[in-house]
Length: 66
Image (tube, rainbow, N blue to C red; front, side, top):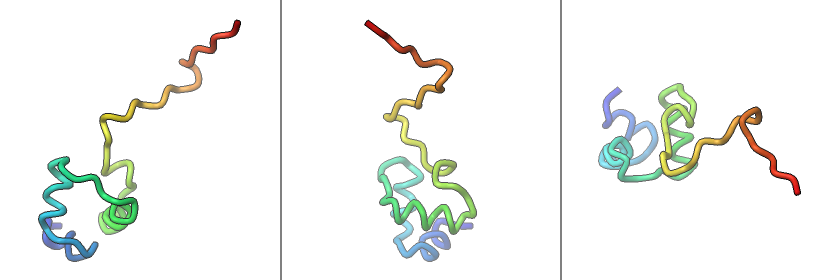
């Protein structure tokens, strides 16, 4: 699917898709949902926010007790 086709499917300009691909624009939850739906994918498979720390798995957490 081209950028133009995706943009038309989700109701935005092609430039918005370009900025998303370049990491210059964070989509609204609604736009992320619409894009994921148009691409038959999950939101978290399409969008990665590197400034957010990865959640720790329960088996690797430390619990400090006084």
